[in-house]
Image (cartoon, rainbow, N blue to C red; front, side):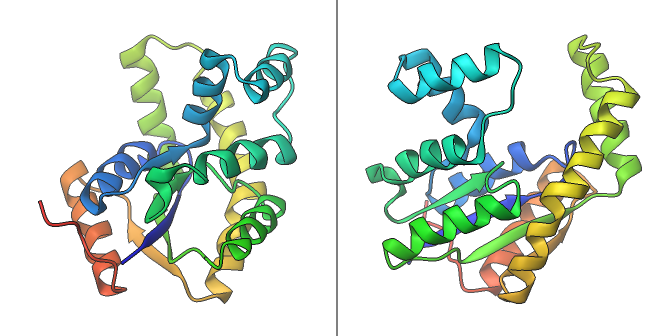
Length: 197
């Protein structure tokens, strides 16, 4: 049984935390683009050097370079039986890159978990996290700008996956454990089985 999953939700939806929990429950690696970028930069790989130069110059990493890094990560042995992607694809162009890569291996995504969190809830969670971590870059204006980018660039990928019938919407408001249980129930309802512990 494979589990090729993608978790999508606005900033502050808790997708990073839930992604790690779900990956553990189903015995697959959680693959976040942020982690891939950091790993490649710290290991000084050829791609890492490229990414560091882009980030240092204040630019966004292109779809092509991001897709190359994700393909490299998905080709590793631990992702052979499945994976949970977080933060990729972040736009419709990247969906095309992922489709092409998976199709080349005779694979496709099984389920896209959509964490549904109202905008006000996202803003209050990010603001709370910023206060706890002493981050002043997470002011309301910056948060609103990031949510606008999510709604403009990332939310449309859900329409692509809805057409394929693979989106599992999950209410992202509640305790961490409640949300984890909802996601697991949604995945099991679609035939994705948890690993026996």
